[in-house]
Each structure stands twice: as C-alpha cells, then as structure tokens.
Length: 122
Image (cartoon, rainbow, N blue to C red; front, side):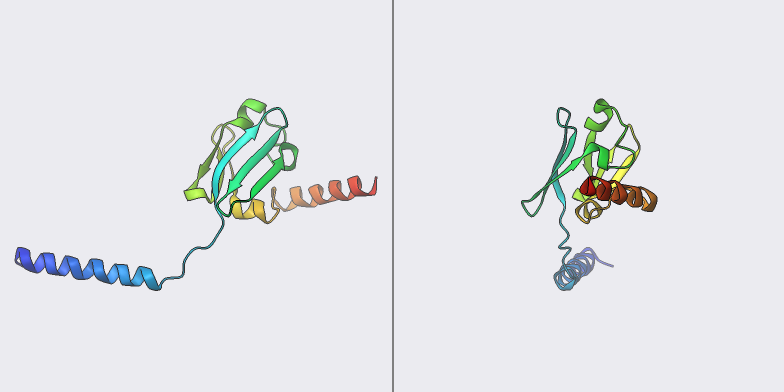
C-alpha cells in the first residue's frame, strides 16, 4: 500500500467510526460530578450531573457505617462519574445504585429497611 492509500483507508475508517458513534444510543445515566464526606455531620455528599445533590448518612452505607472519619473522608469519583470509591476501605458503590436507594447487599438492605420501619413506628 502506498502512503496515499493508507491515508485514504484511515480517513474512511475514522469517518465510519464517527457515523457509527452518531447512531449509537447515548448514555443518559446520571453521574457524579463531585463527592465529599462531611466529617462534622457524617454525611456523604454527592453532586450529580443533572444538578441534584444526593446526601446519605454514613451509618446508612454498608462497610462505611463503622469506618473512621479519616477513612470515610478519603472518597473519590471513579469510572467517569459512575462510581464512588474509598481506597483505604476497598469499597465501591455505583452512583446509579445509590440514586436507586441501594446502600449495601441484600441482607444489609433488609436490615436497613427494618430499622427504618422501627424508626417510623416509634
């Protein structure tokens, strides 16, 4: 192949990829744009790409509930805003899961919901 043929083939490949990208469905999932842990209030604060904010008490999150303030404060956004990660705790939550109310595994959620019902009844 000549250099000109390579350039033409490359341009065609790029144009084809751009056309395919236009026709693929867009990912409309809400992502995290900022995250921090408020040590005084013991709250996880997540700013979302749709402009809303998600605020979750530390005790509501499995494996974070008993973490030190220092460890809970060491939180980052991962996976292009789709995940929240604590390196020291080796802990991850999906942003979509948090939005949907998932705070831990099935047993944690069962116990969590029971605690909520107890608090409502009291």
